[in-house]
Length: 322
Image (cartoon, rainbow, N blue to C red; front, side, top):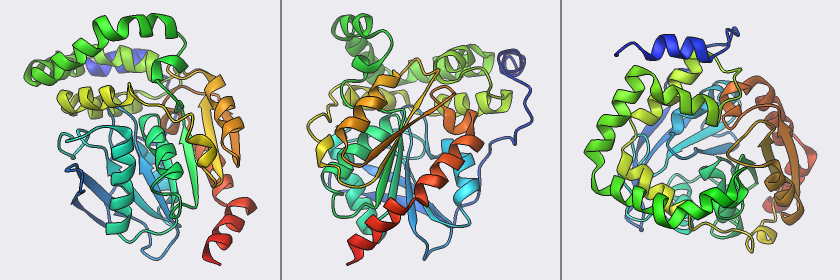
């Protein structure tokens, strides 16, 4: 059972020659406490005096998911990786509401003296990014990258909205509340499923398109296996109350909206909608799954680099400094 994840990951994955993801050393790291009571684990990398990029990961992940972006951008940009409350090395949240997380982000950036960053959010992190750019970060953000993120209740922008919305009140919310009350049971189940390889199936078919390598698949399932289930349940309940539709026109900075052609979690129309509602947004589609940041990192990083070096982003930066 302990090694089941290896043969299953080989069977479910491609044999592409891609560098294995891992853990890169940071320039500095530690925990920061916000006025909400939430505590965040953060890591800084890259040149201290460079332009900053802030990374916000998705649900049931951690800052480790950004391995390929970190390796690609660390020489040129100052990078900040934040573990959401209840994820990675951050303790369980006091308040997991996305409005609170957006305010926390503003406090974290102030504590670290990070001015005018580009904020890159994936999935749940993209939800917080939009709330931040429309509210507390309005005067302290250069641009945003919203990757595979919806603009309202997450079930409304999936491929099976009616089914999931019908199950939300009678099944999903009670299940998440049960997970919060009995975390030890779910910790054991999560670890067993990681070791025997069962969790690889859900990650392969929900988050990847099939072109991921075995090491990439194992890397992401390992992150999830070590996340505390009570923290994930809290975060899930937080995004079930999410709605940014009225806030989108308030985002005045350049925005790159990314969706994936083979993403079962987020429909492509969500990216089209964000492009029409955010005044200075550009929508691009990646031929990948929900974790394109890992599965097709080379192509994605080129897209992101083009956005970071685009004249409109540079012009906006100059306008802020005037």
